[in-house]
Length: 555
Image 1 (cartoon, rainbow, N blue to C red):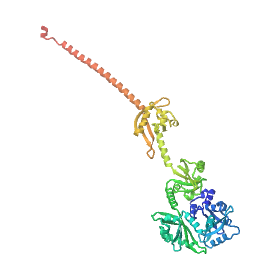
Image 2 (cartoon, rainbow, N blue to C red; image 1 turned 120 degrees about the vertical axis):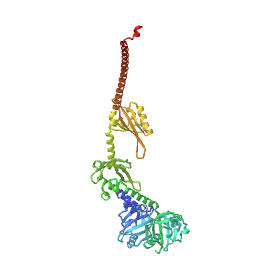
Image 3 (cartoon, rainbow, N blue to C red; image 1 turned 90 degrees about the horizontal axis):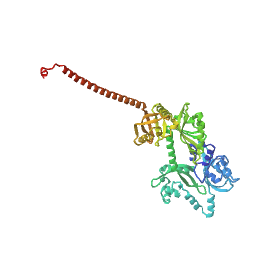
Image 4 (cartoon, rainbow, N blue to C red; image 1 turned 180 degrees about the vertical axis):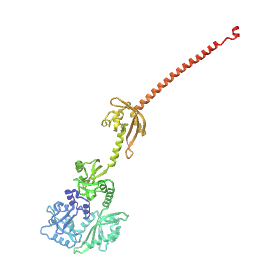
């Protein structure tokens, strides 16, 4: 507990709110109504909770370090006498006495005080639980009965309350006890207190300790409901006595801590996750002082937790970026949210490397921002891979371009810049179709990729800003993120202008060859015809040269 004192410390030093504070809180009973105070053996106040502020009117800052005698009436020795009993190791239970508030108003309180011991067993002070019973005293006077009012207070408590005799039998319970066990008051009274816990022997040890020492605080037990439901509780128990000071039994109050225990287990689980992750998790105050350092941070930066906790985070940051870090912390302190960003950090070896950094605010129980938590991921390998991939893209002589689902250019390489004559910054964000002789055909091409997943050897003519045209064949496919979501189209164009020119020249040459062959064929046909006529003519001449036969001559 001691939230008021801890809050005061947090104002003076936010980094002081650590796991140690939680352990301190766990050692004192948490109560929104009762005052929980500790003093030295000389009566100097050393802790002061919010309940004490409500009872006495003093804040923690006003009372810590001062004598508790300012709460007593002038000239009264009862506080000194109580401290003397405490120094003797004697607890004081349900001691009723007058007290003074800061505003001067007198109140009546009931005090239960116990000695505080150091590691050697010496009494070093006292802890006191003080309840303002002024209203009860007034009510008792008006109603004329103590028991009715006491009963109403007992029943008003939501916490299970039970009284136990020296034999360990239940002598009384409140409604909270009947609810947590599922048994009626009549059934519970007279039964063994230990029968309602998962560890009966431990429960017995608890109330026996209260009888022997006078009180126990934050004694952990698990109550078992009759239907099997379990409730984790912390018991505070002390003896109660009659007017002659004879011990009558033990009164025990249980605080349900089931949710707190689950929350603690969840925190432990998350802490284990944080400690085993490869990423660096770093906690720091708004002033930049490191307050937590996981194993991932040790692997990433080369420093151990012992070396870094308490140091300023600037040792991890290149000098020219330190102002950037403080600006980020200032924004967090104002409640602004910060997006993840890439930056540089420095290892213990002096090596500067790339990180992806996420910074989130750390809040206390009241929602106040008291520090920051950063997750730093070493992206050196990814950066090198990205740079390598970029160098390969830029090394390509072919125009490469990425296109969004809306048909806008999202990235280009140097080849695309050369073929269009337009710089990268002007190309990005413009319509892909604007750089072709046939925009509609270009649009139909990338839309086909989105519908079918790819296209190959899609013919287009790119238009340079000076009017020069380049014939290309596009091959394009979808590209996706790690979750498989389509981000756009990646298209590579192969310049086929020279190929087309060569094909045209080959076609022209072939045409000319065909024409020559046809001419030759015509010539051959003409030549062959002439030769045939000459042969026939020669034959006729030969025939004419032959001598005429006698028969022919006789005619």
